[in-house]
Image (cartoon, rainbow, N blue to C red):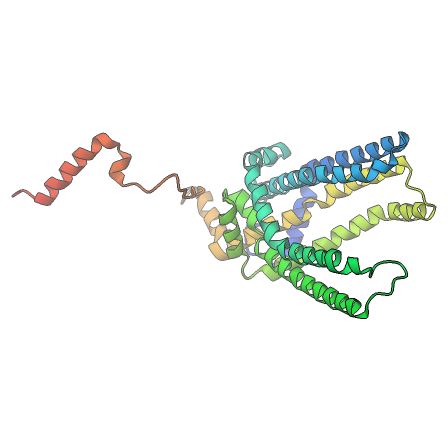
Length: 356
């Protein structure tokens, strides 16, 4: 049995995450580089398009080009990020169980079911961010329909005191609800935190993976929250360190009413690629280790693996999910219609007995 298959404390999970990342850096960085590379290419293409429009004296079209790239970038980033996280889950599982793992093998194992993982991620994001969307949509509709026509935002305007008071109250309530939505989003994210590892490693569809995550994460959501908080601080710190020079340069250029030189913009994107490659696998690796830790605590997964290694039981296969297209059948139906009369005759003879 693998010595790392045992219940671990939060500190031990963090140590194990760092150990796996250090000893298999090329593997995990290579998996993350696919997502980071897609982001790099798209950002460089946007910079090139902006410079072309400026060269052609079409600067007025820049907002539309930026909007177009946002519409293009978001789906591609979503797909590449989902694939990278799923491949990372698979690679961590292999490495944690002392099995060989490669970048190509990790992506090859998840690509046939990539649509399932993206759909699962979409469902989770919908339930996590829905309150935010509703609250801020209602708030901005209120501003546009009620407040804006009364001229409260016009320079030098003297707004109606009642309108100003109502706007202040609505704003206070909206931000209070936004804080409540943030807490709700964190709680939902913790409930769903193990859904993607469960889907990848147990071959579960979206709904079953979510139920599996809710079951496995019970009792450890506080530890998962601390893990996410620590890794978030580490990631933000690395981003701040790597991008600090460029932020200062952008601020200085803005004061001169200019923009960063093209070579500096490209350098910023290259540094961003390296940063995204380095920090990308951290949280997904920790969550996969938490998934195994919860299975060990709740289901005795370490004992199961030990019995498999000793030849006392066969490897547990993923159970196929029931579908509406495959209704339950009686045993005689599986033999084919030509066997039904023979079975029925045999059953009749048995019930009648030797005396008829």
